[in-house]
Length: 312
Image 1 (cartoon, rainbow, N blue to C red):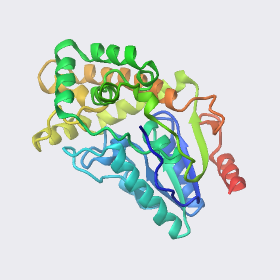
Image 2: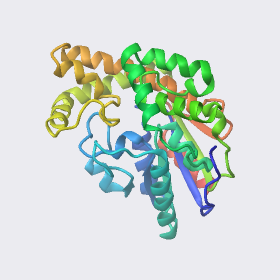
Image 3: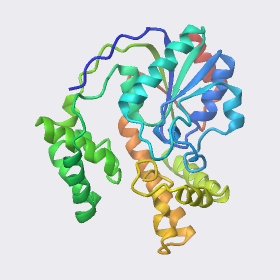
């Protein structure tokens, strides 16, 4: 089961959470510049080098404004799992505190954010290559939906927080269920939170958020997303890699195989982005009493700055 992590310094941490495209990056930089802060990315898509446009990675100019951690730490054929993320993020926070600065944990990968700030550590269930291969073959043969349905039957709580198309996460949840005989969601024993954390949530009207997300996809395509994917393929990175199977990348497979137009790819990315947004709200619930929610479409950043200053 999930074990309590080694106690970490209980210094202050500001978490900025919420769905994709809501404006977390801009707010984190605004606050960090004014509060002697540094950003610790908890977005698993930002770990990988060369995957910039499709992940909406902070630009070099944005990263130059305040120090950023856990961005561009791996090549696309490497895997940064939860255990490695926790080790790196905890080390970054310790170093930021040591320098007398304020860490801002920013991201929409709910499992990673909550694991870090609630004191989880990964379950002591080592990977089972044979079982994983069997489950992945089942997904290829019967479709990801069939594998997801199997997880939903065994562990509806875990299934509700996983995108049905994220085969890697579905496989891992099933692996833990089948190896332990217990639901994946029951493996977690939340430890005493290791930091004094202020949770800031950004949200907005769902229709407006979808429109913003759609516009961002269009901007990514205009900025050369297809060319970015082509460079990755030419570098030898394949569709079955976890990084390449992520949002904004795997949707290009039919395009490069001559089975879809660029317009069709963009439309699919938009649909999948909306699906991701719904799953992100499963991790960061609007009724979570810890999270102080602000409407990103109506709230001035100065108001959030004053709120954080009062907490500090």
